[in-house]
Image (cartoon, rainbow, N blue to C red; front, side):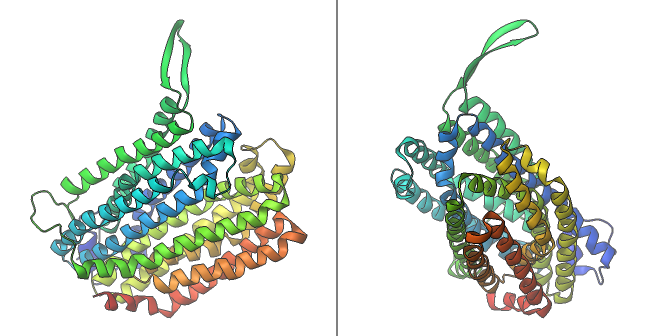
Length: 477
């Protein structure tokens, strides 16, 4: 089969039937799948920026209320994502093996299983929403808004769960374009809903005509509802496309049971459980690092937060390329082509490192601008710039760990990489940060982060080279 072009409908066939796929063809396939995924990742970051600026305009209390429960929302989102990964990786393997009916069977079971899980998670979130801000040590002035924000977030968790599932299924089938476009749409809808729900009605004069623009004026509640409505709307779009239009996984007009089977659930647990545990413990590490930075003063705490936000622009391309690696490696191994899987792994990791090296250079040069647009405070600016320029040296190896992790997920190899991630962040980053912060301040914390990311990149490259990650698929059958 001669290779000409790639689209969601022929990806599996190309991987199964092409005798040889040259490096130019592999690079083309990686780029084709990566660009929509990168756009989706970047749009998600912009959505966070816009949310932060809109809520920030309400005052410090509003920002603090959302910030108080932010790590807990990240935890719930991480668990939901892990459950979706457990099923979508199975689908990638089955499509690569040329078994679309079995892939649809996994999708049907996933729809029921993930809904059950999300309802349990949502119920527990709603149950603790009133107490959570108090447990986290929030001041009385913000606990009410924080509680309401988390309650709304929890109530809409089933929609977020299906968003992760539908997007993951489409991406693992080779369709990166639709989830990417929907990601951009979600950003636009989030801005629109927030504009209408957060702020109060206002008088507007346009072309000499004066009128009142009706808005809800819900403040922090409006921010939660705006994001939830944007997620729900785009989830409906993704599910509809998956059900009616996604040729590889289309359920419309097909028959099959939606009842989850033990073997499918067992494989999903083996793949997703390590990811979920990793997300939980990583969140704890992030909280610990914040506790290390907090005694350094308000300026250091603010600069740390802004630098983390600014840096996210640079590493989002790595996650997009990692998603392409998950799809290509997953389908290659499903087709029984381990040599091709290794080639795709090297291609995606190499591309990720090249792109993020460029992003690191840009970050080093543009650090004053990246921090300056978020704060006028000269001390915060100076600390933030120093942090970003320290971190810039770690971007190539950070890319290696991000993309290699995506490759390992595609192979169903999640246990060892999750342990590697956790060991690296806790043993290297947290320990070094605790040792360096008292003498070097915030700069020491970011030196620790840079050193840890370089170390993590090295150990992920060593595992990638070993090839042991390719054997995991045999244990999942």
